[in-house]
Length: 59
Image (cartoon, rainbow, N blue to C red):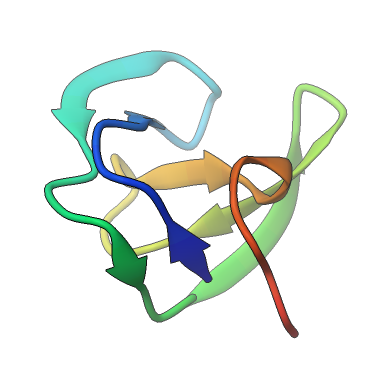
């Protein structure tokens, strides 16, 4: 998953956290699920989810 710096991260329930993407680049995807009707990707813990549409995702 390629993301840009500053994007907000969300928890597993779709609520925004205070965390943001620290720097632009490629991130490993650990899981995929639909949250609030959007394909979402887990980048680490349950507090580090992003919508797949926010970056370039190549499954």
